[in-house]
Image (cartoon, rainbow, N blue to C red; front, side):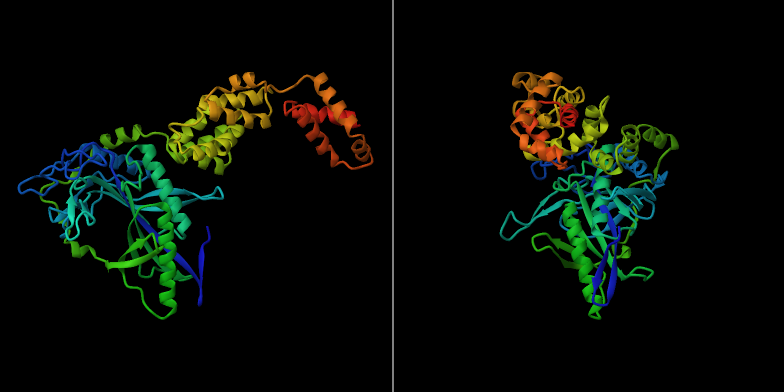
Length: 484
């Protein structure tokens, strides 16, 4: 996907790398047994370890390790059998220990790849640099008191996977596609729910620009904690243009951390960018190196589900779907499962059209989720069966679908109750055609004198006279015979 920004001095290319913090799905925190439920009352899910009490020792949660390895395998990444936890030292009110336990030089997961699904149906590979485990900090609440900040430690110690991409993305759209694909993979794996609104998936964007044709990278800025795909794309767009303006005015970009103001659609400076030595990383003396056995990794790999890329390939192969349709349908696992139920044993292209067209539109209108759909997969499949066996026409099917939404009844029941069965009796249709032609003798004469386009008019009149119930294929066939 070519994306260049035009400046006063020529075209510029944007260089993007993303750091995603994904909250691990686990019932307990990374180094303590405290619960991880979202929305609990402040400071009700805090163990002495999370609160940084003296003498409290961390104990690794094996489920979190399994989830990190599972994610690494899902990202086609190298699993490091030995990894090391380190202390990242900084002082802030919501970090009671005075350090965050993270991984620095030896992460649990190494290099991998994500395939982006682009709007034209093509794919593009983006490299994964690493995935490491770390504990989350608490939360500072500045709006509870006029002059004081409150601290909620419920999130303190919750397990996070920091997934770091290579600087391989070249447009806001690619960054958006990367986040959507990563979120889809995490949800398929069951390792993170990907809910950016609840903060269980947060994104830091590293952005720099360079003139087209220039090798190497220029100074980058990091935009912290952006919490939606749309805002990530807006933040990158704004920041890239800001860099270009600075360079074209003869200035230099300072490496710094910035925040995105979604109300104004702009970034603003937060602090100068820290370097690793500012955090004084060193191996955590309370935690031994994490050593995994090859069998441990192999067992997790054997339990992996079919992931979006593999499911997309299968849909294209088994259902003859286009790359675009297959990509839309596999983006969400529940949607893929719904479609597969509808398509099984039926015309898959017709099933895809109904699911991505009328059904998706109804889903959006109703505000319901695919897990609680306004029409079940079985009933939508039943509607397609009625079209396939000529019980109803495609046009009548639209009417039946709307009645399915209103009543929740199966399509066959609606067709029977409303008398919507398609007329396939040749004699009955011929009778309607004879009436229409008799009523439009002038148009028949025009048609026979060479005005072929009037054929559509006759089809429309016959369908109208039959209240849409006449079989369209039969109508066309019989009309051609009658008109000579």
